[in-house]
Image (cartoon, rainbow, N blue to C red):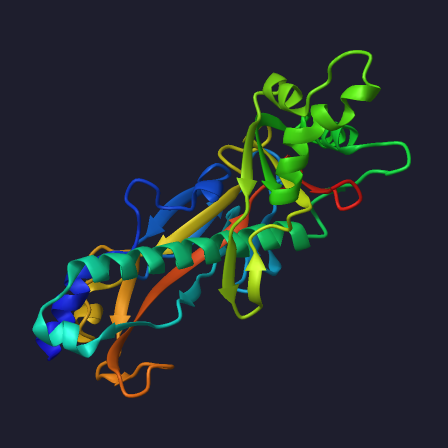
Length: 309
C-alpha cells in the first residue's frame, strides 16, 4: 500500500499550473519567484527608501512592517498553507489509479491554494492603514468621479494601471453610460476613460472557504487600483515567493516532490470519509510554504464604492 501512495503522489504531481503559477488576478499585479529549500528570501530596497518599505502578509491577511537591516535589504518569512482534505475512495486506489479523478482533485487543490493566496494579499491591501483609500460623496459625486480621483492620486507614482473590481463595481462600470445617458449633454463612458488610461479592468468575483468562513476574494462594492510600472521602485509593487520542498526529506515521507513548490500529501492509512457512512478513503491535501508582501504602497489605491453600487 505504501507503494500505491507514492504512486498516487507521482501521478498527481505538482498542483501548480505551469503556464500561470499565480491566480490570474495576482499575476497582473505581483512578481512571482521560488526559493530553494533553506534559502532565505530578501527584498532589496529601491531608489526611494521612504517609499519602498516592505509589508509582509501573514496567513490571515494581516500586514507586518519589516525594517531594513544594515546592509539595506529586508528578509521576509514564509507562511505554511494547507488545503482541507479531499478524499479518494480506497477501492479506486486498490484497483488502479483513476487519473481522471486524480486530475479533478489536483485542479481542485490548485484552485483552492491559488484563491487562498489571492485572498491573503487582497485582504492585506484592503485592511492596510498605510494604503490610501479613495471614497466619494454620494450627494454630489458618482462612481466616475471617485475612479477619476483614484487615478489622479496614483499617476504621479507610476503607470501601467490594473483596476481589480469587485463584482458590483464591475457591473456598475459596464452600465455607467446607460444609467446616466439622460443627464449627459455629451457621451461619457467609464470604459472609454479606462481605455484612455490604458488600464486593464479585471473582475474579481470568486470566493474561498477558509478559517474566516466562505468569503469573497474582494468585497463586491470595492476595487483596487495598481500602477505596476512604478517610477520609484523597480518591478511590480507586490511579491509572492514559494519555497521549493527538499526532495530527500519529502521522499522519506512517501511524497515525490523534487523541485516542486507545492505538494500533495496523503493520510498514511484509509479513513472513514466524512458524511458517507463507512466508505473508506485516503485524504489528500495540498501544502506549500509561501512569502508574500507589499513593496510599494504608493502605487496602490483602495477604492470604496459602497455608496454608489
